[in-house]
Length: 136
Image 1 (cartoon, one colour):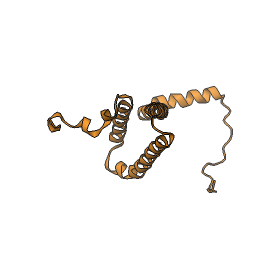
Image 2: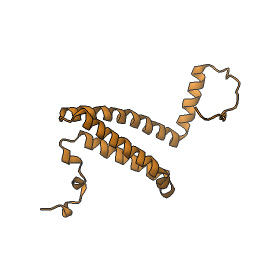
Image 3: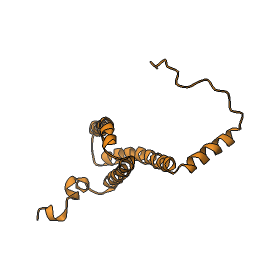
Image 4: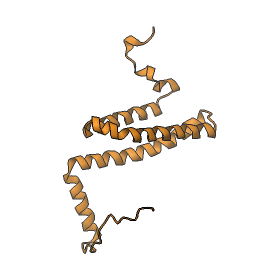
């Protein structure tokens, strides 16, 4: 909106049919393993996490949380996302892209498991401590 710099040059219209252009794009994507894997991971992740928000709202409502409390929790999720965005450049300098993607997928799996596990204590950090450090 405020940017006036043209980022793309003027191009001639491609005479190839749309179906051929789509086929070319998919074959390019399929021939690049890293880009293909990343696209599939992020597409499925976007789909799943959009649904997770809906499931979260339904579970919170059934648990008796008020609309204000549900809104506050979603705002906390948004704040955590913003904090992650601010930390991302530092993390990217320290870790490889492979490590970042694997960590993202493991963390996503943990979040999904916590979202569908019964009881509020099932996602507490105490659950993930080693058995020897738990109080008896």
